[in-house]
Length: 620
Image (cartoon, rainbow, N blue to C red):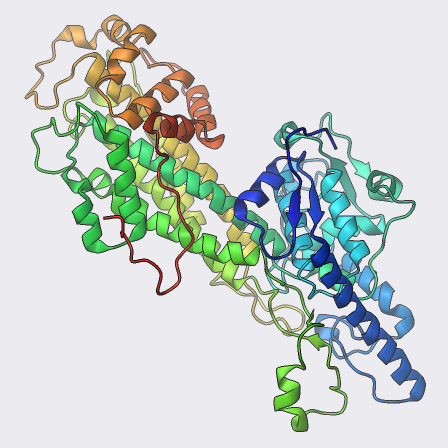
């Protein structure tokens, strides 16, 4: 791993991993992890439980007594849950689960096409979450296996994991098998060193390595530590890929929500919109946290503006007037998803679970007389924490909520381009319309992406296909829900980039050419549609004067957009402009410069509060 001066290692303990730390680890391979010693001691006690189970089984077999059945340790998996296994084959069974479950597929049959595999950040986040789950001590794995996963993270090992194949129960079986089958010398992987390695688009320049020949050396072992009793099951149980994708998406959605507020504020100024709809009393009267916070962001962004309330109109269109209500509902959905995934990041999610420091099982005390003799185990708790339903619902809900940011952003974009609704700005915001098309087709692109989002917003969690001979008869599809969510996030980012571009162009017309929102008819004069006049009024030297008419936050946003894309004087390719502004969103440069200008950052989104917490909108 590359030297990382000033980057502290992340200490995992199974209890306190935050979304922010997980994202930092996933997106910066220079950050290393280490394990809390007390958590490792808990892992050792859990492993002792497994050793006791194996010992008791061997003793019962030798004495001819009834053999205790412990799912996945002394029995087979899934349909074979009641099939007792010869102790001589216990460890081979754990290896077989990794081999038999490595059946994933990608977009195409090309084994070297990166589109077929999960991105680096998802793989690293999944490794960290699986490790953190083991540190709770309920999974029955060896401390040596924990150390192996630590080495995979710290040495930048990225197995190739196909993106499709999970039902989200019993966890993400298929992708997790691919993630860890490399410990058997199967599959391929590559090594990342720093953040620049996250940007690969092809494997050109990336050495794809065969696990059987190179992984032991890359991990610092003489031979690979193949899974022991129960460990193959522990490695593959849990909706961990789903949780990793949802955690990354929650982090990105929070930043995107503030970006949407920034874009809406710039649009509000461009149409000289009404501020009455942002009054704190209005939003406190409804009492929804997200709505109150979005309205507060908009008020902060436009503070000091000389354009707001200039238009002689009673109220604005819904896409502007109802921005806090729509954006706020999305913020509340993000808060719910954050609550779910924060708990999942620190959860024990495999099966069976072991509680070596707890008392006897509840059912043993309550229903002991009812149980057959064969059900004599006192160690293992067979249950369903691997089921991805909480993650699937949260991902589906968040997908719908994020798609709404694109829906309303596209409507504001169309309004800015429509001369009948943009308060006297030129159609498509371009000089010499007719000869030039302006931003008309940029809105087409936004509409296309919004339409795609509508298809992707169909919930995955409402579907369930029974598997394992109807033993696993209800599944969550959480991995599908989370993958769709990531696509919708990217699409929404693109739509907001288009709105920011169009809003900045509208500001150039409104301020640079002093375009009156209250003018009646075509009173502007032909010189104002001359491209040379527009170019002179909006050149870089004029921007300080333009910004003086804007709010503190919107002024900073306008300058950020203009640092990435110049005003459109005549038709040109817009794809590079969209990509440049989208990069400002993706790397958080846009909200960062706005926060710096405001002095006080735009509001963050806390996790959903429990009952009895502070009343919503208490700040008002």
